Length: 484
Image (cartoon, rainbow, N blue to C red; front, side, top):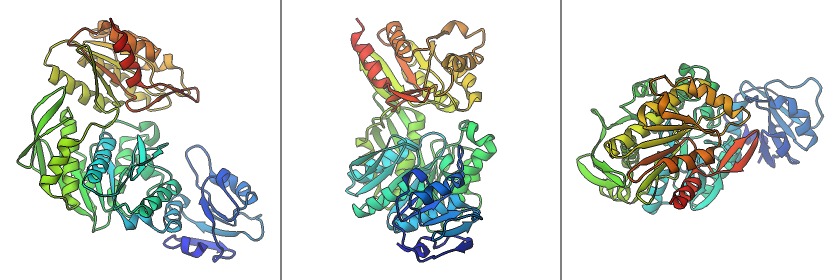
């Protein structure tokens, strides 16, 4: 593809060289540059791509997009100066791969909690309805039924557009995507055309990156600000921040709610450990999910499907057939002892899960919670998480999550600052996560419920830069089976 075609809709400040040069590949990672590449120098959170321009040219880059054209530069290379290279990367990637997002109905799901569940269930539902679909999620990316590992909640622009171009080749009509606040802030979704956006909720998370809740809110809002008038904006009216998302939003606006007045409404009629009965738009349906927040997630799925032109009866039938997403309130039951594996890793998510389990068990048996906190992430939520678990559970085991580069003992020290003297007797500390899960199983009796929180679908534990195989579901299952 010619460079001038790749540069369409990018605001160019200055250029030097041949803008008609043929481009064989596009990259923002100098290590992936091949002869004939366009290299885009992006300043990231850990390093600045401008430091690797010489390396990219050395490896064969024939054109470079940067924020400042170097004084000393190799002849024969085309240079393009732009104001925002991160935004330019997204637009260039979209152009290079033929603007694939304009050839499908792309739906973005954003918010603190519920993104994975909603995006995945929409993907499964539309697949069951007979459509070819794509999915970008925290757990896994899918092109129809082909799996591609997910390294980020939202991939980088080159990988994202490359996969979406493959989806177009495979005749996908609908693509569902988790849109993280990091992706919005880093312009990873720049250049994409969304047919709709869904907002779930906004609670305490990612302040290690955004620094303030206001910045976090602004990142989410900018996604809705970017939606076109022919798209839809669907927001959770039960979250006070939903109105902020709709301010200055040009898209068609809709609300869903499990508590108040909205365009789409639902309520929980009854629920048990195996599922719940919902009333959605005056129709009743049994689903294999538990928890009021899952009622909200399923309502969002229902509403989005309606806005995408599906019939009410078909949607409700599909909802009754869908299964929970891996690692999201996943029930593992052996010998009348119930274990729940859940990804809850924020204060709000833990409150929702613990309140749900306490409501369902209605005081029967104990609730034993195993919980940790991730390293190299927002430290301020650690004591809150520990306190929430101790206040809502009968027994709590504080343990290691993904300590990453941090000392796991210091992470647990931070968590323990949230434990007051009144709830201290409920809490024990076992740093080794495997031993913590086994201890919870040893403590549990028939009728008890164990919550293993924080890692959900993850199949690894990251320690000092190394990922070791570790799956909460496997560990819990093995421990329950070996319990005599």
